[in-house]
Image (cartoon, rainbow, N blue to C red; front, side, top):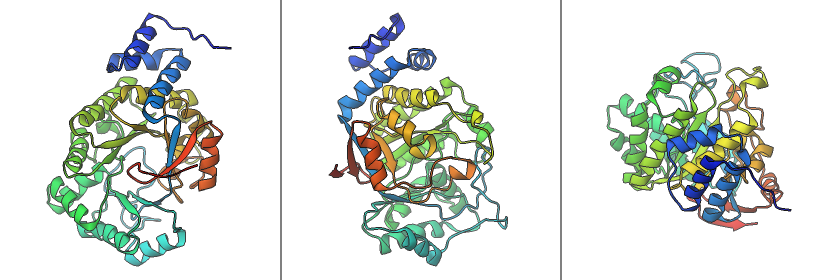
Length: 365
């Protein structure tokens, strides 16, 4: 029996725009955030995703590495950072880095995912050498390292331009930038939540420069704290505008904010409705992105599975050991197996597709 969904005139107008390939406005996005008709929002997002990706759902075997947690910034949402000399502060040097990787390595790993603190106690050469060492010992793995905010920090710390920083990192073996450090790309938000980090326009510039140098990169949005729904949509609009210009982003990843304290109650987390709605709206707003990722680390495996019918076609990867979200109270495991990922995708009625960093297909299951 077919389900008849209730659509008012505004929803019908938006549905017509989606189906005719017309770009949605911020005002359209606000309506989608406010409507009670979440099922129609999901249906539209699913239609767009199926046009772009069929029933494929992508994953990758990757290893997460945080070389240092020492950081000059004071982001109010972060539980990962430590000050120099503070208890549990660390900076991995070459031998420690290689030991860390060796203990967790398997031959299916295709990517190192690297972010860390803005550590002024080590030179830019330290960050370059981290990439070189991994490339030397594990040439088969791609290096996805250093957020746009880290690129701005390196430039400021080393007295270089961001372009010069990126060129040196490419020479060391850097393959792509992760999407972190974006948080919410409005200055109102950043002044309150991450005042010591790259501005909205510096983050966008770092990625534009990377795209100009031939890299394809990632974009994220950290939602669920003080930002308004309009700010979320402004964020989407700004990455969409850069994508129009460069076509350098591969994927957009909405990240649900985790509570600041490990013992914080569940009422401080984003709701399942907000998580699924945000995935769907991301798919509908970002018409020039091929992929929308549901990040299982933040929203859990079961909600990630639901997100596969709300416009998402990627569930990230095995990770091995994630630290940053877990440092502020993520309730998920720190890693997941290939077998578990495949089961999660298949039981959602989708086709599991193992990919490499650049969405080349390794194997379909």
